Amino acid sequence: MEPGRPVAAVLFDLDGVLTDTSEAHYLAWQRLADEEGLSFDRAANEALRGLSRAESLAVLLAGHPVPAPQRADLMERKNRYYRESLEHRPPRLLPGAQAAVEAAARRGLRTAVVSSSRNTGHILALLGIAERFDHVSDGRAVPNAKPAPDLFLHAAAALRVPIGRCLVVEDAASGVAAALAAGARVVGIGPEERVGAAHQRFDSMAEFDLEAAVKPKL
Ligand code: BG6
Ligand code: MG
Image (cartoon, rainbow, N blue to C red; front, side, top):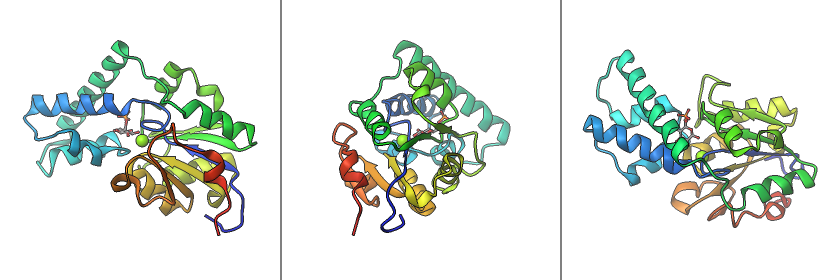
């Protein structure tokens, strides 16, 4: 963050910040891991937050040599489980998410969704909030996924706002690392052990306070 320069845009992560799809991602990976006899559980899933589908699979396979076509099949299967689960239980906005987006717009800040997910468009459509944002950068936008800074830099450039004047809201360790590497001001949503590297932290979106987050830091 550039000292003394006010925040001009808020870049919201999707899964785990705007919507409750993190659980559906986890359950889909768990089902795949169980079917494939891979060791995986809820605690191990914390490390997958924010990572791309391919990177998540690599973590799940833990160095097992698996040829590319088989990897593609596994990713396709996980995505099928994920998408099917959304048909049974559609995604919901997390408490506080809508208020945060509205507060940003009321303050005249530009807004974007910045997510590793290649399902971002589908999820935003299901939530009915796509029109609320000035821009969306998703997992298809850049070759290097989080924790690389590229996705946040892509969104800032599209909004024509210097990254140093962007406030990023993230629930994943990989996302916080990506936003810090990009040079943004970063708010972490979740426990200290996961997002403690952020400049500021709230336990959940229900606690998120935009005014406190945009306040100039000394
Ligand atoms: C991130 C999620 O937003 O998107 C990860 O936190 C997920 O859990 C990643 O793996 C990629 O999502 P998708 O929808 O492209 O498989
Ligand atoms: Mg997330």
